[in-house]
Length: 243
Image (cartoon, rainbow, N blue to C red; front, top):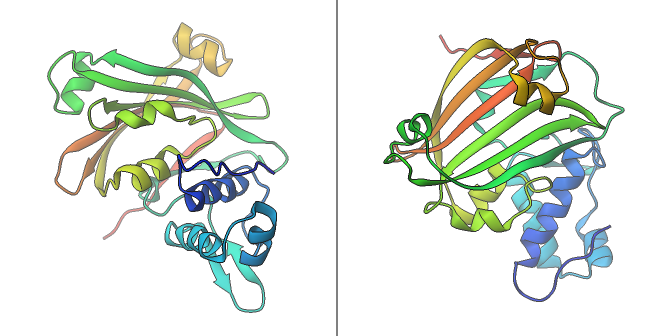
């Protein structure tokens, strides 16, 4: 159990929300299981009932948990409902139940936007952008590489966070109140080049699934560009279409 920081730099309800969120994504609270009650959270973390209740409400509003009569507050999902991955999502081809899933930060800083990134985000060439490169692993085995790009002026405070633990999507929603509208994606097959092969621990030339995604806010402004590289033998895509 990680104690909360009571020095006032970050709201207690958000800190508690993040502790519970981490428990959900790392499997401490699996889908179908209950998270601690408000009274238990008050006792363990020494917070008020209003703080515990607000954290629980945030989890429910984000689609992670739901109250069930006679049981308590039950985990119903490991992905926030405002994530664009509800449109195009990946599913596991192999069981990760017995492994600890986490994201390792490989690179996190500011770069001058190259042409592909500046075009995708409608920015001038060489505009400063934040680049967050992470590898998703199960225990020590890589599963995919994800690289996120944002205009630095739009989300400058994210440079002060640790996104090996914290959910990037939830942080953007809670800190900047970004309202996502839609995303466009390109999906195609590639072979692993040397740098990516090293990060994913595969041979150069191994087949990968490459997805490029641009996410737009409600004002139709592109705010996030994502490059993701999936190992072809571990993931496949399921696409939901409306007729």
